Length: 362
Image (tube, rainbow, N blue to C red; front, top):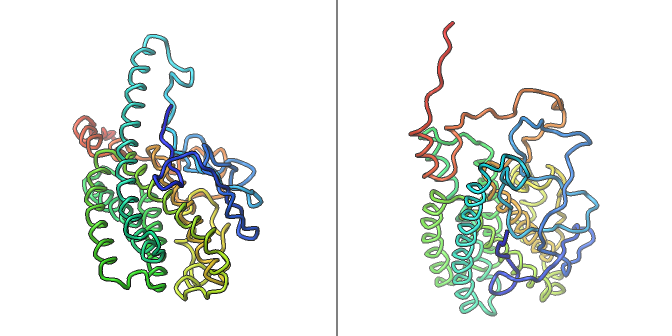
């Protein structure tokens, strides 16, 4: 299936590739945006039975030399694509699959246009003003998570959604982006009134647009956020390459040291859904280390947003239990169909068509 690439170019999409190595052997020139990220399970045996809810992502090996970000999380394969089902429904399924591909391509084309428009604005006003640009970028990047939480809480109020993992992960993502913003403010990125005005007004418009988009098509909203995070990654990566030596001579902001190294790091682990908890513990010694970790955070956001594009595929990293028996027949989450929907159109459809459960007589 043809899907647009989120790139590190000024226009956002392209074929450039870089590869991210672990912190102890930093190699900024080698972060690659590819088509699949490496996987392994949390233990030698499956943690979740096949009857349980689907797992978001697997854990990267500790000695792995690269973090590969695929362009977008692929939709679930249909029975026809897997070679299942009879030939009688093949034509109908093929037609439906073709329509889905066309819709995905249209959604991503719109997202490319929207993201490119914002990038052009940032390039025009912040060509040589790095910290103010980062302040505006972080103000915008945290907005989608507020929008996702708003819509999900509304769905919960109507009984349409019962997935706590989405709420936990999205809140953790907003918490991470908030600390990125605090770091940029401590570096003086918000000193000018114009920078605050531009960032706040773009953020307000982006919030309401994302709310509407998320209600209609969560997949499209997640892809747009993936594109924004991908641009953020490439922005910080270029900055590190250009200013790396100078940054190593500057002290780290206090807020960065506290966030990355002190206190309870539960929320820091929570947004990194492709990693096991406690598998990443940054070491902050100077300003260079701070921006390396901010860049790496954006890569983790990008992977999480991509995984979210497959409906119902998100799990909190803390939801896994290594002590869970492999043959346990009890599913981790047993949700009624009516409480699991994708977008408001799907929610309304299921609310009307789903019949209430029949109570058995004692």
